[in-house]
Amino acid sequence: MTNIPPEGLEEEIPAARRRLASRLRELRRAAGLSQEELGERSGWGQSKTTKTETGKTVPQLADVEAWLRAVAAPAEVRDELRDLAEVALSATSSWKREHSRGLRRNQLRYARMEQAASTIRIYQPGIVPGLLQVGPYARRVMALGNPSGQVDLDDAVGARMARQDILYDEGKRFEFIVTEATLRWRPGPPQLLLAQLDRLVSVSTLPNVEIGIIPLGVEAVALPHHSFVVYGEPEVDDEVLVIIETLAGELTERDNDTVQLYLERFTRYRAAAVFGADARAVLSRVAAETNGFVDQ
Image (tube, rainbow, N blue to C red; front, side, top):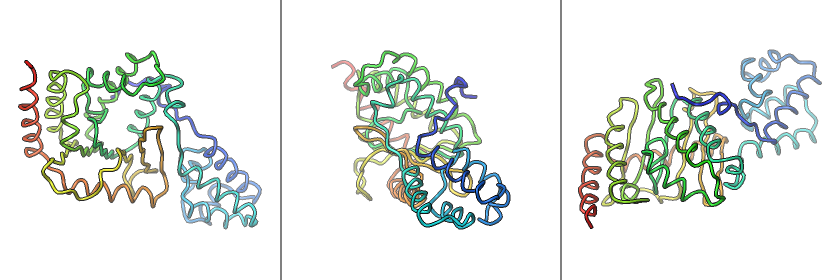
């Protein structure tokens, strides 16, 4: 079990999401409907209504429309709720804000999302994903990505290492796609990269983990764009969301159409990647070349 403190598993619900949940609850009550009755009118169970009203899940636009029909909401209210839903489904947060309370807290936030998802898909064209990093590599990466100079670097690295326990939960599935260029990016001495490559070889043998590598010599199937993580499996998890990292901050997308766009893009990257023994052969080749720099 991942050794994450309980406070790290509590979700901080954004303002737009809280407002949407509150307004939907108010409309249901004003219409004199129970949660069960609203679910019956809208075509879903009471559990979905409860999770929506508490902000645990963000309703899709189609669900909001069904809710509004069930409570016979007037036109001006419908416009208000649609606007709220669109904002709640797509949230942007700057790194300045995310890091303002320390780097460790951000790691605990990721841990919460990882524990809630049955499947996690990660595409990373630049650096080794955090769930696969060794401690010294993680420390260098986090130091480079700490422009605000937060002082809890040690605690943050420890939290990132603790997150990795979840890789051994065979009830979850992990799919990683990285480029060969990712394997060659070196945030420290050659010995650090060699240790990181060895870690990738080891994790690639876990039964619930797939590490795909897109070799440099493979013809491109899509533009590389940016890194992203898809948390959850459609039709399995209550909610599927995408986290997209940019230079300035982080974008969270919950809209089904947007999620599907990223799932399709992940499938295209996956088609260009090699796995298993072929992936380990790429790792061995990169390690052999890196080893040549050790004494230089």
